[in-house]
Image (cartoon, rainbow, N blue to C red; front, side, top):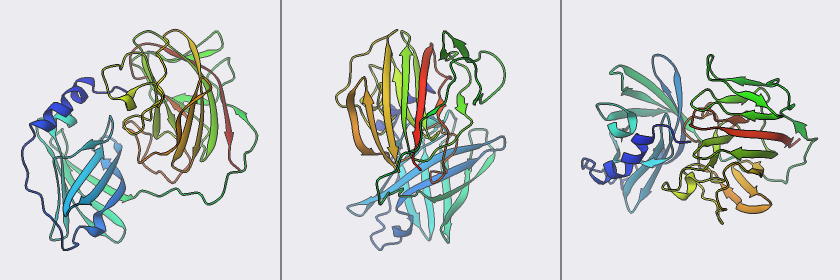
Amino acid sequence: MKLRRLIFATGIAMLMHAPVYSQTANASGAAKPFLGRWDLILKAPDKEYPSWLDIEQVDGELKAQMVGRWGNARPLPKVEVANGVLTFVSPKEEEGSDHDMIFQGKLVGTTLSGTTTGPDGKPWQWIGHRAPALERTAAPQWGKPVQLFNGKDLTGWKMDKPGPPVWAVKDGSLVSPGNGPELISDAKFQDFKLHIEFNCGKDANSGIYLRGRYEVQVETESQAEPSSHHTGGVYGFLAPSPELPRKPDTWQTFDITLIGRRVTIVQNGQTIIDNKEIPGITGGAVNSDEASPGPIYLQGSEKGHVAFRNIVITPAE
């Protein structure tokens, strides 16, 4: 995932020079109903964008991080609660906009709802629901393995938009188009074990979205970015440890177990993420409904070509 490369690259520098907003201490507890993780939907005139918000109170001061329409979780320069109204700001540099997006909303029952002004200058509605804990009280019982890719064609898969470039099937492998559509499985899953083999070309980038929401990174060109953006990381949240050497044009394997929010990733037989919690969705997710089953989704919108084969999923019963 490297959407909006320039925006991301300037994001950290922008935050260092961000305008200083006053913060409300909220020591009285007015902020308490707003604390925690929220799955958001941003309703633009043309489509809905999944999003995510996490609000914490540290030493009486509110802090927030957000996943917007693309990219990874990032700190916000302003979040406050006053007179029952939540306000948070996403900087213009992160939004591809000529103005900061100022979100304001209220909590009615268990639903957050409010408005902002989109980059298009039009009013956008947004809503939020508390992100589910997804805690599991018992070990899963595994079902029968399912072959998701038949090695011949795109049966069981669909591209998220029409037109070239398109995904191809070559020598029994799915090959990403480079700056094209995403490829999404028809079948949806909740908890599962996934085996997948990948071959990442030189200076290429892709990703494997678990439940269509949490991206496991595949790349050979993100050396300068944070470790969680490297191959095997859960984009923006979890870094692989140890991080294995990049191997362009070489077949490798992932064995991924996702149970609730907890993920284990084994790359080429070595555990690189061991039963870690995924806090929220990745930008580009199919939706923000974290409680629901979701597809396996292979990213095709980034540059270069990445091939995938032997995609086998074992769902929990």
